[in-house]
Image (tube, rainbow, N blue to C red):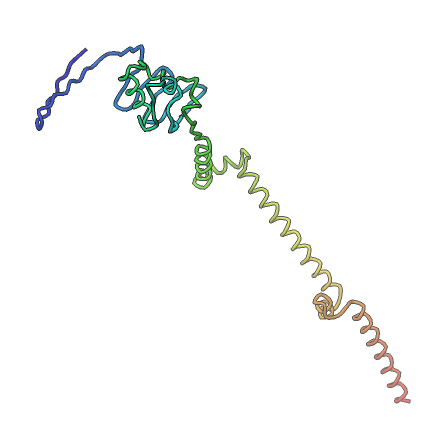
Length: 226
């Protein structure tokens, strides 16, 4: 163990810093507002532990359940007696009720004294945002690799290409039908039929009447010639 003495020039206060190769404690290790205990770390009003996975708990604004057990006719405790986990520990330690912080906050009273903070939604939301940024900002090679491997990007692009191809095929079919009509008959009549100005039957009747008129003209010409 090495001792280092530090003297502040303005107030002449001394600070002793001790350097160890290792520290082994059988109880709790307190460090200015936080305590490392057997089951986790108490920091302010938070309890951080790796029991059953990484968990973070926030202390309820109540008198700890174990502390309530020390109450009797002459001793009582109020919510305002301490404002953090460490403050409750220091109070109960000084008054001689406990020696370790897990005597105030035992794991069996975890859900009576604390509320679990669920970060899963925040983590999932952050992951979704990062995935979206990756999709937007990926390099050309990464984009091609993503398409080749399938996935959401491939499915979306394939769907859009299929829809566009179908729309183009329908337009091509309509144009071909119009060309076939034009090539097969009179252009003006075809356009009038397509625009709804006349019906196909009406056009056919007009053609027949025109042919009959031409026949009568020929007959009249022949009579006049005689």
